[in-house]
Length: 309
Image (tube, rainbow, N blue to C red):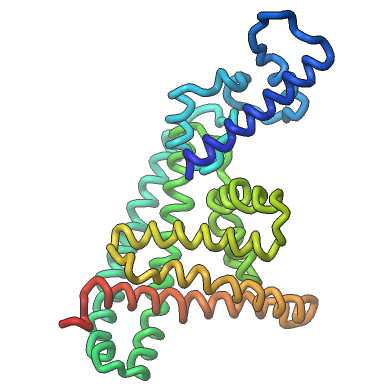
């Protein structure tokens, strides 16, 4: 994803440079044998410059195409490349230590809940899975809901808050907005837009808006964006679990497409009424009592081969 952003960004910069050269040539044609002058591109870019403080050097394409800049982008907590990133003045050792301690504590909590609560419940679910006892399975899913939600929230905190901020602090990366208040989302569309901003920005920049420029409808573009996101979700889960023949993550993501429309319709009906937060209740019920526990149980059954013993 990062290399795709790197390639797309520099493709746009090459096009911008060509346009800048055409404008410069139209105003004053260059003498025969003259070489390319990228100062015209720098002048064009400067017209859209902002007053962001503590950015990298003011160098512009093609002087920014260097291995150090590529390596910085690879390790930076962002998926979208730009010529200059906002930078913090210095690394704060105390803050780094606090992030490490918080990450350690939360990882221990995740391991404790997984071993002491989730794994016993999954083991006790095996007879119901083999017998296909639906009432018993429903009971197990309800019991799994709370510990799985705890692990999900703790994992979100460890990755999106602790790990991303740790990388940002060590690299003096100034943009620390990795998520917004997704827990207050009243529609599924709002949740996917707020909970993972790096991926959301990548999808918007490299999938959604390029597809819109192809004059596709917003519905078709939204479907394409969800499909791309579903493929990446499946790759992230299927590769370590070797579950490519059971594309559960892909199907779960694609199931969000009708849920987005349904939750938007419900929110439009209850907006401005005492039931304005109904969509938020539906979101938490869908994720905590249906989606996450069912996914954990299905992947457990797949990885352990309970049905094939």
